[in-house]
Length: 137
Image (tube, rainbow, N blue to C red):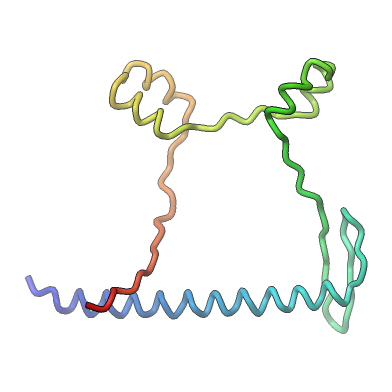
């Protein structure tokens, strides 16, 4: 089997990916700079809400919000002080999968894995490609 055409094609594809990633990085930097300029021109904005800034044929629609997170340990400590009905409306329980433990069950406890697997949906993720330069020898 002649691998030269494959190598040349791979070289070309890697070069194209490298150029695309560089262009993407540059575009992201330009977009961030333009967004910063728009925010500076908008002045003081409400903490949460939508603000429209018209200019010519375009309108910048600026959405502001607050990201809120829950400290699970603190919540567990104060949970007895929160009425159950309010707590259920205020907080969601979000189960997260520990993949290492799932793989252990699959390999070592197939019967239990079969039960657990019924509650899990699995689908392939998009492959990730990272470029690394060869070190000079």
